[in-house]
Image 1 (cartoon, rainbow, N blue to C red):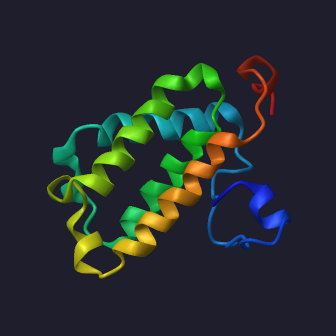
Image 2 (image 1 turned 180 degrees about the vertical axis):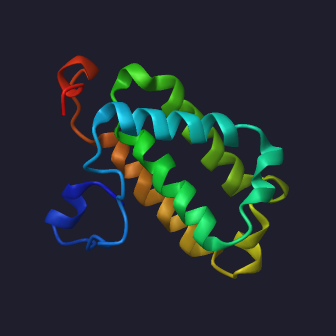
Length: 130
């Protein structure tokens, strides 16, 4: 999941198994993302993510936080905090990331998600009906 522009210029191709929440209505995206982010702000919650499938699912929701309207800056900031902690604090990241040997792939996915911060946006009031 990353900015469409990156695919349009041929740098990367979209994985059809990602961007699960893309076509959900804004209120649904906002609810899913904000609830997950609120839960995972506490570093002790990382222990429930025991497989890479669990981590990827949570990351899909977190990544959608980067396309929320700017009015949701608190949620966006929380996603940044979670990702920062997962990258820079080995003791505060899900242990399966290190155990799987996929740490580099994990970082690459996070950087792709960060590209979504540069998505064109409109105000939440104009997106609320979508």
